[in-house]
Length: 414
Image (cartoon, rainbow, N blue to C red; front, side, top):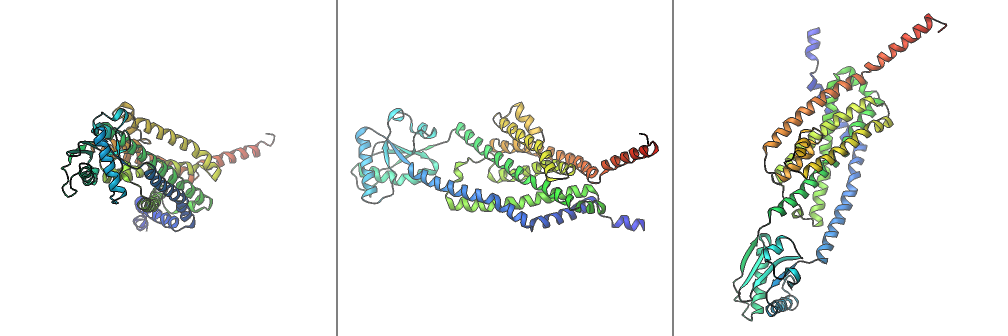
């Protein structure tokens, strides 16, 4: 009989899977989770629409221009020709303006690379032999229009455009580095907000089940380590569902409001690998934070106690985020290495590194180290969880109280 019972008993992983499946389905189809999903959608929709409208207004208020770097007479002829073609012939040509001030004599590629002025391209040379300087993505867009303007300004037939020489502007290394820092900052901020927003579900779920005595039923049926693991990974799966919903809405807003991904420089490892690292580092950060929150939930009996006990962890996470942000500004330094090693800041620091450095092997080491840290914290948290939920401490307290009353009964005069 005992052998049959031992064989029929679930292993820790099997029991954790049962708990995870039960919690996942219960939370996923609950009204509270639906309203939880709808909550952040309102600021996302409002912010996306406001940003899209603001982007359109900004584009209209600051329309792109083509700078003309020629002598006064030739510049005037080019500008008049462009105005005539745009207003009389209805040709879609951006406004041509003469270069003036400090940039009048600078090299066209330097002006565009350093983004001085609102110039999308610069035309130099002469109307008979124009030279178009522009980024690679704008070269073909303006080449035909510049040829038409030059032919009109030079008095030649529009059917015989002058040959337009091209000079492509290559983005400088400093510009690439600055733009990748912005991508790293955006990735860190989004990772932090999602971790903190979704991590609170672990606490609320645990406190609710402690109040309903469900946790005691689970503890009597399966090992507490399995309960801990099941709840932790169920919350992680629910978090991915929430991210998928919010991400889908964000993509739809992005497609409908005219946002441009060009505003963020491509990370050093490329967008597909960057998104893959973002998913992995979110999972690691969530498991680390979730194990702490579950441990805190095991020590709290009410929602007020949960808020009181979780406040230090929240403040610590803010400090960890600031530490990782500071380390991002010092790549290759001892501070960045410390941020990558410290388990709580490692996901943020390594995601920023993915945006700034092309090396992949540090991520393999970091992910292995974070997995080890998750295993240690999960085991330690499960041990504390088991002791608190099974009330091993209160039994000692109750025995102490029984001893106190026995002493009172033996010595009435006490």
